[in-house]
Length: 368
Image 1 (cartoon, rainbow, N blue to C red):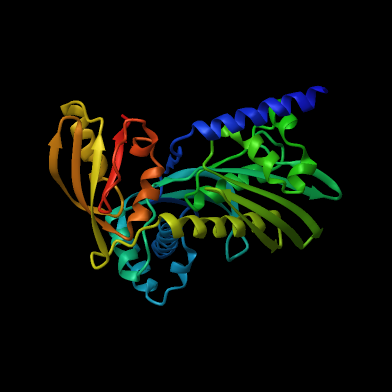
Image 2: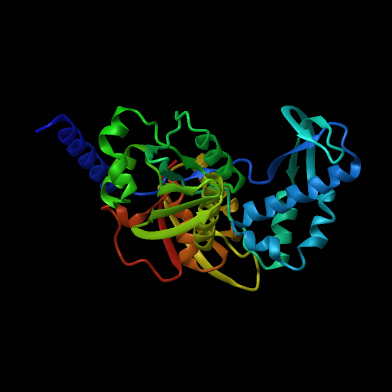
């Protein structure tokens, strides 16, 4: 058996074992959801700074909700006009980029870094009728096969292609944690460019196993001419496979469009409407709470969950803690959110689990 075939068999078996042993997803906590950085000319007027603050707040609204539709809302301008009041802090940093101003002059620039108040951003989104997507979000493994002038190449983190940095920047702007392949020998043995170009799910999933991402986005991108690019994408998540066709004026434009669609797909599952009028009341039954430190850790964890309010400890028996909570949205959405964090593992994964879960009780085991 040739080396490539043998190596790929081991990689596939490794992927299968990894998939069978994984009990929860390993989502990433995005730390800069309410932060934005914009380029501005050195010596810009106060008015220009305020305009950029409004632009930054608009981008934060879209990033936190996961849905660009918020930017088209008729009522959003009244919030953007008051963008300065949302700021917790802002600062200027040096920047090497040059720009041409309205007078045709080449001017130096700097970066305006802004941090907005999460509670006010969330409250405004709720007032506008949009949901809030928490900071814990699924990791997305991205594979891109690009064809330019008949030459096909797989994008990697170490690629000389400038597009690698652009993909990361575009994903960061949407609050999407992404992973690009290393492009090393293992990647080359596990996934051929022709397989990626064909968007064959099995080899793509096998090659992705080593990265332990929650979702996979694989695409083929090709130039039609200097002003037109076309692409097809395969998105794999939670056993679902969905295809997207995206055309644009550049590779960057295409990637930005498809990331917008993926953001909308994921936020539709995980973003929560923080509206007290639409709530369920459930009990979280959490076992494995063996000491006072773990007790406080569990309470803090529940109190910080997006879409959960009014936590109330209803009982403590042996190592089992029962906490009643009000849930914005439906219970399945709460299950999905908890599944993104390995600290609570569904009890049914353990042989010790007995009895049927009551309809108003969700059973988990604490995994500190």
